[in-house]
Image (tube, rainbow, N blue to C red; front, top):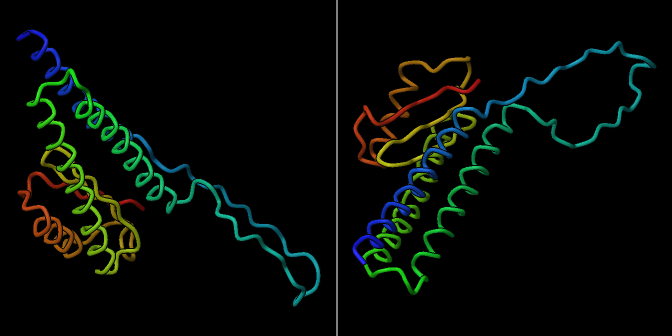
Length: 179
């Protein structure tokens, strides 16, 4: 019995670590594709009506943020499904169920804090951002206000927001400009 409990704990811990690793790797390696634009010579008369569609061009920079949010959501949903299966499994011990419920509650808290951080950063004038909280660290990918880099003041504002919401130390927060 002791061996089964230890094996289940190891499996549960491995799933949580694998989820964290999947989120980190997806975040680290998903870069937007550069969009090639072409300039065409204008034909026709000035003042002619030009019809355009309202479809987004795939691979734009704003798609990075939407893609990151979607991936974050999908990964969290998968983790919650695994954890909920542990809580509903009749062969799981009460400690395993308790640990799974605690992890589910922590995921819910992280989701709430990430949303608050993103809202506050956008309120400071940054056009786009996405926040990822995992295992006591926070990573914030932010689109700079005007230039391609973040100023020291911008970085300080973002750090202040993240520290006030998470209570993490400065060493556990990464700010990544996305231009």
